[in-house]
Length: 260
Ligand code: BTN
Image 1 (cartoon, protein in one colour):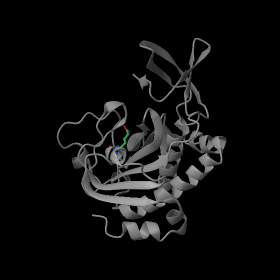
Image 2: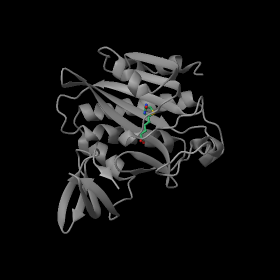
Image 3: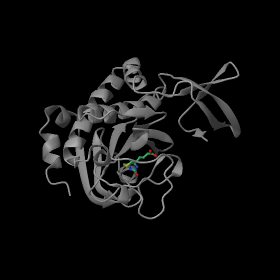
Image 4: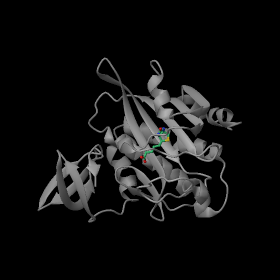
């Protein structure tokens, strides 16, 4: 269980100025679902769970979080006035995870739209969801899962179809990490990147991410408007969209479209 987490978060002046409410749960189906049920959550509400029983991944997949071993956290922000650059909120969240890992001497890379990999294995995933009231987006819930202390036997107990082979901080460095300290460091990085977003420093956010991205030139297939398209990865723009080169034309792909 988290014993000192609240104190550790609040002992950081920067975080206590940004975080309006901290909800720490022992067990919940999904921290994102919990956030969806809050009535008018304040900008800067954080939901953290020791364990998730039905964690959600992108595109309707399941996300495994092992009791007491990993991090499941959702940050709730007011929905930005314009949603033009909304895709960058996942990118800035990936930047925050990357920085946290780099500070601990890991060498993370990103995979569009928002997988974080170490040695080509997935260590962290991000699921962003809007909260609608009367057909209007009011809040943004950004959920992050980080595999901290779980081992191979956790990942491969039972049958689970991992799209990308998983790894954890423990598996990569053979030592146990304090989840509380990783959370505090992640939140400090996250709210700094949120400030960059609020200041519209979109290029700064994207450049950090691009410098940890190795997929340029890779050939991929995608389903867009029901049609399968094959092309080469060319770039990511400041809306967080992927640019694919198909027969000398550029096609823009958003993160809701499914890569096959
Ligand atoms: C993915 O890579 O498919 C996204 C995984 C996101 C998992 C996190 S864990 C905290 C939050 N609550 C959820 O149910 N999902 C996200």
